[in-house]
Amino acid sequence: VFDPAKTALMMIDFQRDFVYPGGFGESLGNDTSLLMRAIPPAERVLKACREAGMFVIHTREGHRADLSDLPRAKYERGKPTLHIGDMGSMGRLLVRGELGHDIVEELYPIAGEPVVDKPGKGAFYATDLDAILKMKGLERLVFCGVTTEVCVQTTVREANDRGYDAVVLSDCVASYFPEFQRVALEMVKAQGGIFGWVSDSERFLKGLAAATGRATAGATA
Ligand code: TIU
Image (cartoon, rainbow, N blue to C red):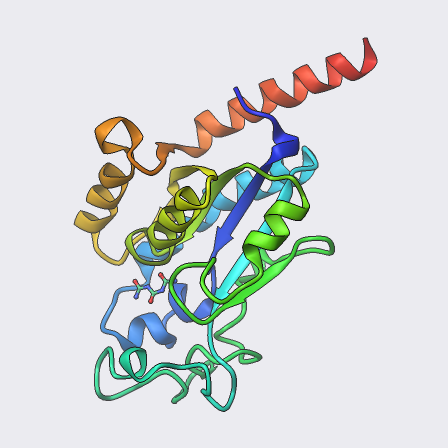
């Protein structure tokens, strides 16, 4: 039971740097294949939301080419071999404008879908995301993206503190760590949904079809 006109689809950080080999995620020692699994269901959800006329927002984690917005505390993280800003096989890691920083083809933004570039894990910190959501009268956020326990969960927590309802689609989010995937989703919905709740693409698509069916029936009645 939701109103698609007041709901935004949040596509969090589906960047080559996280989901493809040779990017930032792999430089941290991760197996990126676990993340690629979220792409097909997220693609189905994205397509359905576009058809339903829902507002879609994409985010990308990354930094200015001069790294002037990269805190030392973030730069020093990770394996000492490669850092943010170093050259990888898809350009400089997590630097805006580089191939690796951009969103994968399957989920690429289309006209009318804002892309929020963020320097941190959360999409509200140091961005205009809250302003966009308020301007559009959006109150509920549906989350797809990577990674579940880092940028998705951080943004879900930020969203709930700002008064937005948040639902995470379990098969449309992914982690490099299977146990983190499981517990990150449990954390969101524990204690009766302490800062959000969890669904999956199939249930969401059914709900969306029901909601748009109602809206269409209402409009023609
Ligand atoms: N490393 C990891 O799991 N995630 C990130 O660094 N960023 C996002 O989650 N986007």
